[in-house]
Length: 140
Image 1: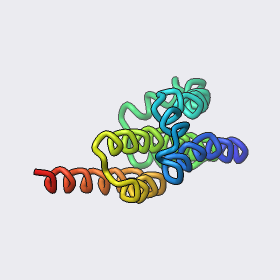
Image 2 (image 1 turned 180 degrees about the vertical axis):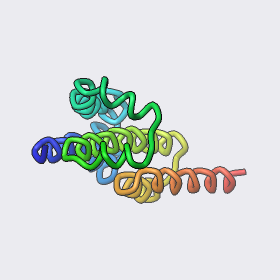
Image 3 (image 1 turned 135 degrees about the horizontal axis):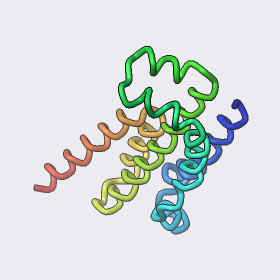
Image 4 (image 1 turned 90 degrees about the horizontal axis):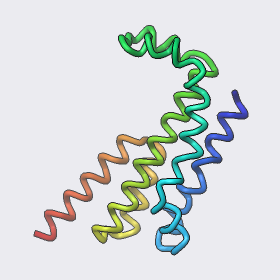
């Protein structure tokens, strides 16, 4: 599981680096503009979840803290959850990147938001939405 955990990080890290460090590079814009960037990490997640879906799904249909602790308390559970985070954080980062470009939000502000999404997904999204709202108010 440790190797899978490390591999999952490598599947998303290049996209984050491109969005944060080289946001205006044409190749970055092409890659991030494609939905395909999410496919490798989504496939890895699916490969981990699908074989045990028949046992996980009933537990998640009526989740309790104890059930979630039990599911995440194993190497397989923690790795699967981590890959889940990576996939959705990448998708969210992609949305932030593309939305900010459409709105003309300064690259340096977007880089801060993307760094926050990368490290603390929902918090970074909240920061971006606040900046987005502030920019909209400013242009009224």
